[in-house]
Image 1 (cartoon, rainbow, N blue to C red):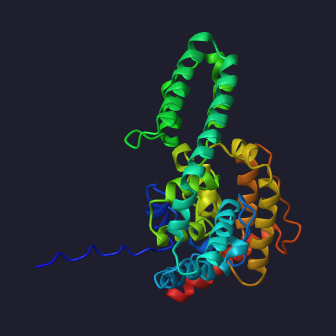
Image 2 (image 1 turned 45 degrees about the vertical axis):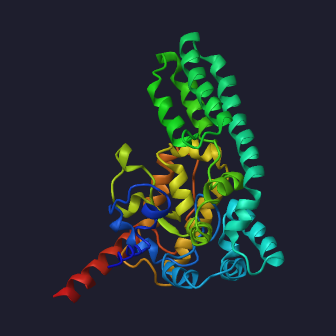
Image 3 (image 1 turned 90 degrees about the vertical axis):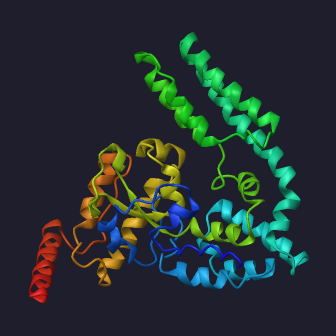
Length: 348
């Protein structure tokens, strides 16, 4: 009797991070559900318009029907404006490939350019490791030596190109936590760890994307281009650092923006993405527009709460204006109170 095929996991807007970003899915963002209903929202971390999570189901259904590179390109074209920079670069590669090979699949495209991209990826990785080594000169000899041992091992793994012992960005970043710097070195060592975060990922480098997805299926590669731009609930103050699960600590961001911040302090994240303060203002303006159009009922105080949270967490680097908001803080609080009273009456 033939074995039954494993059931395909049901992908929802809540669990896609678990399946496609390799991070634990934690159902601790239920207070942020009202944000998922917002429309035409700018990602405060990436500056693109977020693809609503509600679009995920339709995309998955259409993706299952795609057989060729041409099918994939046609499906993704409608989302092109929402794609992130690396994803747009990959889309351009797939589009050019499909024009020459309309009946082929995009995995053959990735296989064709794999070796060239692998070489370029190694150079990208070496460049960051070189920067880390240069910064290590500011450390004491003993701490610098420990750090050099880590970067040297990484270089050896990258050069060896042994599939059984591949270079993993996460492993290197975690290994830095094993080094305990002297008290007077903590600030520079923190800068070094933040520099190491510039090691390429599939979200920041098309070479890393090609290397990671060359042996995946066509469906996985196409889905990855889409998923990074979909909506995700982000803790402004990370849970691991004491952030609470309340809407006043939540942003609606792209999955990519959420994933690659990790637990990085917001001021450091802004150093890596200096346009975040500008994007945050666009985000707030979009939220305000949604509220004026009848959205976020019962959460009219959200703009005030998130304004304060962003300013505090960014140490003053993000100072958004609520000049377009029709509610004063007192009027917003009254609107929330009226909504709660109506809701209580409705439940009775």
